[in-house]
Length: 415
Ligand code: HEM
Image (cartoon, rainbow, N blue to C red; front, side):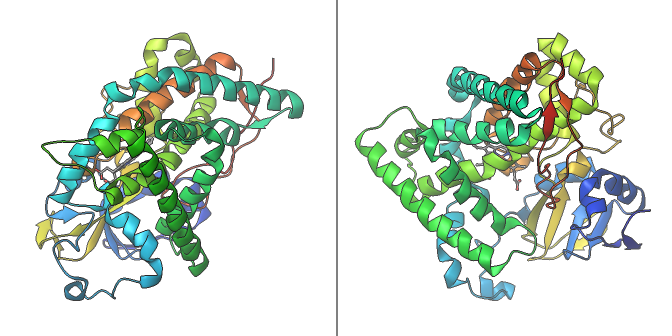
């Protein structure tokens, strides 16, 4: 029995229901059978869960992450922008993720350079060393307490340290960066509270001031870090403005942190539940690459992305109107049996594996090479150090369906 009601293509399903967020995949399978395109009443959105639809819609030019570049808020019937959220809105305004062409095309060309695989490969030795140090701490914690929280001690520090390294800020600043990031990202949670909004605005103000100070410093004495690169980058005579550099620095942390943490923790959990896959990966280093793709697919870290309808059009019999929002469900697309044989099975040799966890189209994750590098280092090093690692207890899933992750991952290491 699933906790949803369905009437033709209209679905009522509470995303905060533990039965749903503990295992959304069984709901996706049911919905795919009964209403593969459905109107989710609780969100007021048309949702798409088949891989082919997601692929097409993420590339559809009549949809966009933003709409106010084409229509005024008044024309859309929206309330005026809230002045009390100004500091937060300003960061979003110059953020790559919130822009559409032509502004997006220009900014993406400038930022892309910093993230291409060959420009981040230099981080491999530092990342490896950081993982080894974290594994030492994990080993100590297991020896002292009999078990340790792998999410807290391994999955969480690595992505924020990576960004701190990229920005060339001291690692001691990481907890502060994380606090700012968590406060700001809470703005995208369902049903945010006024208290969360206040914290997000304060975080945006403080993070912006910190980023501006770093920019001023790097203009005077450039190094080989991301900020120095962003202040100097030039494509066809174009540079980034200070506001754009600030937003990019903040976005790198906010967009890149939580998903990477969750892929590491969800991925280790998936491997622990599938010991033959764990053993296969341990035995063959050539499987690291396909294993990373499979972990990204199998327990997708980000489940929902929305788009605005920029001009009226019809898609598969659904008539979409300007200003309306639609959503693609990436976790559902990654489990579409029409695209993935036996989608509920973890198969680290899966090939091809057209997983969609990094999105698609013009907003395709610019940090994907960095995330892949982190995963390709962190996962095999963990397996090598702890070939006999085991779950100490079943994890509890966080009540945040579209940022899918466990609260904690308690592991132990019997000899
Ligand atoms: C496993 C980890 C990650 C996942 C699953 C992920 C996923 C995504 C997805 C799905 C999008 C597209 C959003 C949309 O279409 O609406 C996106 C965009 C983006 N991601 Fe990631 N991401 C990850 C890691 C990172 C990292 C490490 C960084 C940077 C340090 C990063 C930076 C960005 C940026 C800047 C964008 C906006 C790109 C654009 O709008 O052109 N991400 N990411």
